[in-house]
Length: 233
Ligand code: MN
Image 1: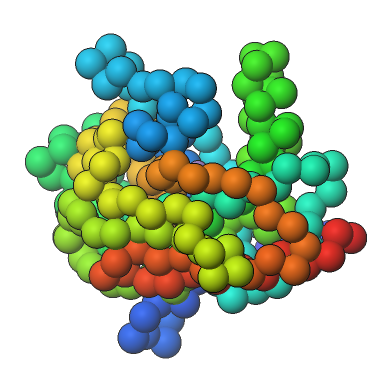
Image 2: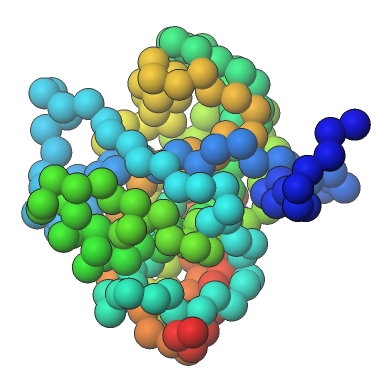
């Protein structure tokens, strides 16, 4: 038996609706700029005919259960919500065609890609990595995984409220690169594995939160996510 100098960190995991087992997390992938109206509000419109999707990753340790209260993070004054459909990979795949992409799908969840927008934009505009803006501790909020093996979600309302006021309202049929296309493209770069989560991108309406804010959001037919922003540490 392997012995370690200190106790290794626990494997990140999420509950699975209707099951006692938890879904162990391997990697967290995020699609950037995947709704036209959000790309425009970021000042970076997308022309799908000449562009490919792009991605960033966050550490699995950033995962936090829906319903948590999370302290307002350090070194930002512009902490943003991003409401997203999350897909959960249940089967390994490499160079998967769009036609076969459904075989990798275990299920879906509703998630928040919380972002230090001030630091992300500085990094973006200086050509630096996005880590300090995106790979924020406790910034990857996610609901339970809803098993939908082999199902491709093509449409459904996606919405978010802060303190009961609607801030984001769109439909996942507006994804620039849809679920099939994301799996196919990402699997060109990575050997996708069971336990990988893919946050598919946020629609328009992203904005800043403050300590005390109550965030709720949902993807129709999937789940409802919640987060309370606590005081700054
Ligand atoms: Mn995002």
